[in-house]
Length: 139
Ligand SMILES: [Zn+2]
Image (tube, rainbow, N blue to C red; front, side, top):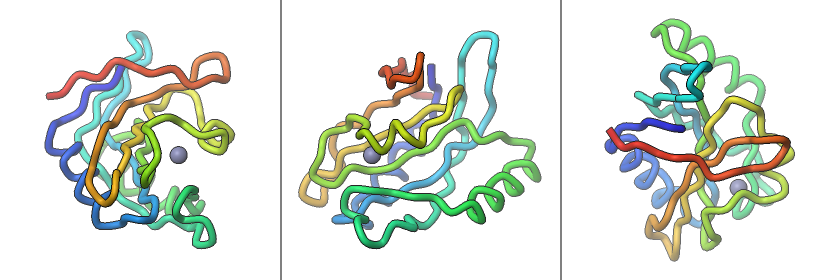
């Protein structure tokens, strides 16, 4: 499950509305309790969507950004616990491409942005190579 502060959800919503009609993406930083499968997010870190050709329905994170965020997290004693991105005018369900790039033990927040306004969102995680919706606790 994912535990996340309400203010972080508000931040993702704002970034998503600002980035509309393109997908925006970023990292969830915090701590992971592997034994109990609990990820707690205390910070969000937006990175640039590197997919310019299909930014309306794809997102891509550069290895450079990945390393930069990892170093930043390290310096604050945090871990990367997940990745968030938006779906402009599409439901908050993972796409086939989302599945292709997903990694285990991470939370994937997908937020739908409907006509420029933040809508539904859910968190997903990989289970046996498929995405399943995970429980979320708002802090
Ligand atoms: Zn997606």
